[in-house]
Length: 368
Image (spheres, helix red, strand yellow):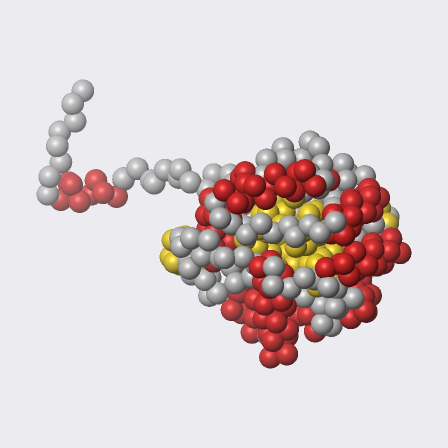
């Protein structure tokens, strides 16, 4: 049956019975909370002039090492991830003493990772889940992260972190002296664009399969100007134009096999040379290079020390996973966690960490 076409008053009445809007978006999300803006957080936990000077000075020193203008060795060392701010500050105080002791040979920077990339699932870091129970009190996590960075920098220890997404960096990047793009995201266009905007030097890890070419490509991309989209300090989505970051470098983290040996280092340098990039890189003692056996970081250290003594100029820095207590532990509801022990990747304990730093400092003497 064909319905007559309505007109006039009948047409006006028909609008009262229009079909409701059909929802096609946000079908798999539920709102948890509003997020504090970076500007609000910075106002609540401001950076002091002394800390600002400290961050800028640390970045300049790291840049000189990466350029080959400073013979010292950059050492990024600390827990796999931060889960207990109290233990992290305890670790930072210990590290501050060693930083002062080895200042003429090592540029020691504390690893302060608040976000964890996961192969499948798992705890995603202090910012996402500060209570370790799936409650996702993100505002509290971001506050804890910024407060910790302020405290560690105030101790005279520069900080390093991995930038995992486009949002969190706006809350903490002003306190970071060295940044990393992880093995799972080095090939990502938006992470390369973000790296080109960051004010600190940035290392790109080789792929999880050991491929260093993607890190070289990332360095090239990050050195150029990009347009990219990101929230600003007030939470407004903004179109940014970057100027490019000239301090990108490879982080050799191993893959199916280690890649810290001299032959692998030389191969990576050849790839950098092809594009007239600085032949300077950082070696990660953990992950694929220790084949997930944390104590093997000491063996990797010995090999790197020999390469330094043999005159290698490619080795600008190293990364080490270290905490107060050796190993790792699982989160078990109702069971207290061991103070100062990792809840993600296993780490060297403090005594081994002291030994490792002493070995590196002794090796660097041959450069001075």
